[in-house]
Image 1 (cartoon, rainbow, N blue to C red):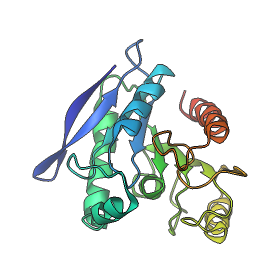
Image 2 (cartoon, rainbow, N blue to C red):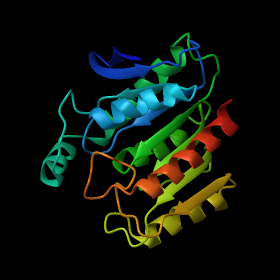
Image 3 (cartoon, one colour):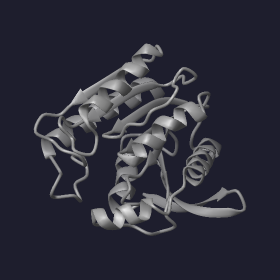
Length: 223
């Protein structure tokens, strides 16, 4: 269903995975992968989104490297600078918007953990282009007053990687800035609960509910 394409980032290039629905066009959704890298889960997620009518694109932050353990993921994150991440996600957004399969001038951003933070920041960096953000278990401080996006969040209570107080603070910041904001909590779930390639964390019931909510949200704000 999808194809690998190159994204110009300054004088270099990074690869990205693009999935287009059968009808040949649809609203764009930028997928920001977690600290594991652009692994098969995030590639298949792009295909799933295309199956629901979206043009999905995910850029590779790590040059093809992926991690399966927390230790390896921490090492990969250690090679990533904020400037490089910003350059990659903004270039990926520009690439998605330039695709002829994406007719609109705005897209959605969907991110996981570390990628959730990049998706959130992208709505501030590119407020005219990002209409909707879906954030899976990721938080980051920021000034969201310039954003024009609506926000949907999926979080696990008592998450050791994302403390409840940080989630509540982010929700308050978005609400206070006047944004359409809905955060959901999934009792019994933990960090990475949506990722079915993490058997230690995957929660099928929570993942299915979050998926249904995500599709409804994206369709309502992008169609």
